[in-house]
Image (tube, rainbow, N blue to C red):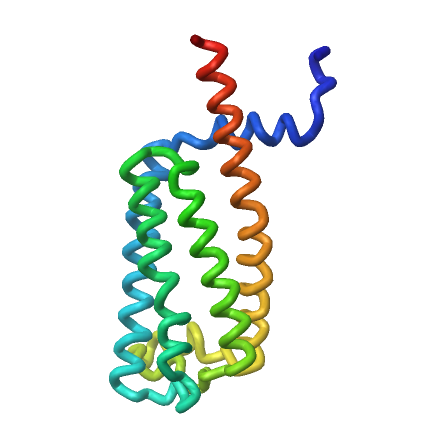
Length: 176
């Protein structure tokens, strides 16, 4: 093949392969992201236990599982990346997490077990302005966008996984 004659997809595959190994900053980012997710999760757990009103009576067992299940899945994805220093080994679990998040977002949109007027109830008064503008309508839009985005990622992630895996196999075969 002449230089520059390869397809856009072939160039993308090489780019995905080149970005598969995480730099130290990326690995540190996995730790920071996991801590941030845990802090936000604890905020919601405490809000649920304290009955602030954010979670309505429609927030039952199914909603609870769908709301919280992405947390351990996402942290496991981050841990795999942190441990291996690569992105691709975590992609199968990332796909599962994407599907769970998409299902959860669309389920929550249908059931809508939230009252965003109470989202800031646990924040100190001087921080409430940060999220006080989030209404139920904005919450619905966010859920829709989260569902749509993670649904797209659930299609994209296996393509990247397969491409990086194939590129890696080609490179190993060519060095043998």
